[in-house]
Length: 216
Image (tube, rainbow, N blue to C red):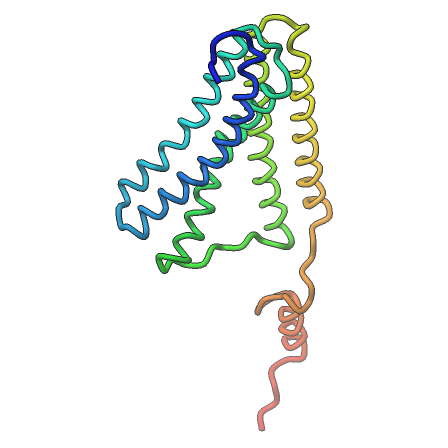
């Protein structure tokens, strides 16, 4: 389908490109890791992984061309901006996540470190996660605003403003989750306390209060 002509002819291409970008991300990720660890070609693997941002660049260019050709900024353009924002922000972490598991599975690397479940450590983890989601939402909102300015007609950008509102909800939800883990931290069940945990410390205190054992 040509990019020339009216925006209505181009808009379906945006949806197809979003799907292609998502599939392409995982294909490039799998290919890059396979080259790096299975084929023992680390430079080639890194080169393949570096191609991933080109997918978002193509999507950005096609979206801009569609808007320039007079298309009304609808949910497709908003979705493209949100996808790019989250891909740019989350992509590196997704690569690290997959790299750790691929290394463990195929290259004898250490097992991935699981996320903490309880207490202050879990609260810190939730704030870090919230920070990434909030940053992604802010980047998406910025791209949406740039698209609105690019169109320059408020009557044609109502859908973009709706997407910005959705990003505010994303920010709010992540803040609520992080705050809840801070104010009401989840406590570990007694059976999951590690050696040296609270129950063992209590036994040590009780033993110290009783004094040293009597000699036989």
